Image (cartoon, rainbow, N blue to C red; front, side, top):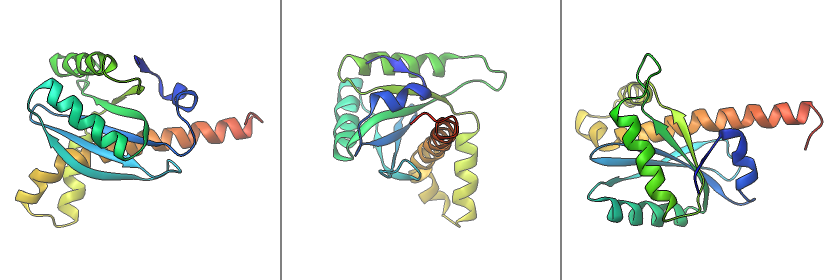
Length: 164
């Protein structure tokens, strides 16, 4: 499936499905998954990148295990809002994934997500070595939590307007 907007995610998921957060790095894929109520993001083990086919199989297996109904993938937008080579690579990754799965993907502006994740790990007194191992999944959690908070806001707006 092609990329969708965050607002469309409700229509493309079923009850009992979780949402995944993905931080696509050049060497690793950070992964996080929501709880069933879509309120809390939890990090999962990162996937070390090899080549696309292997990466896609590993990612899809992890997503299937967590009963994921949609994925929010960080889009590395430049600070001025423009998209550079990393954003183009992320869009290409999603286009290629669309040939392998019907899972919907939502692009999410990930500006400063890695910085925020690193600060959180430092505050938790995680050693430099362990931070390196956990940073991408922590960033994926940060990305996913932002999307989950937006979804909660959308749900509240619907309820306030009388739409179920």
